[in-house]
Image (cartoon, helix red, strand yellow):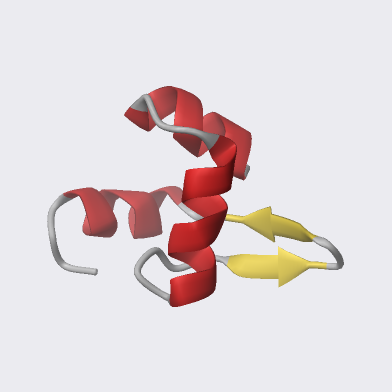
Length: 50
């Protein structure tokens, strides 16, 4: 998922999602200049498992 997709799903902003990614609170991978967030990482974050 992209930060925009995660933001739409969680009703936040893409910038907020990128902050979570940069801080390591939400796990994702960089593909060049773009972030990619696996769905299982989003679910772990939402369930509080980090």
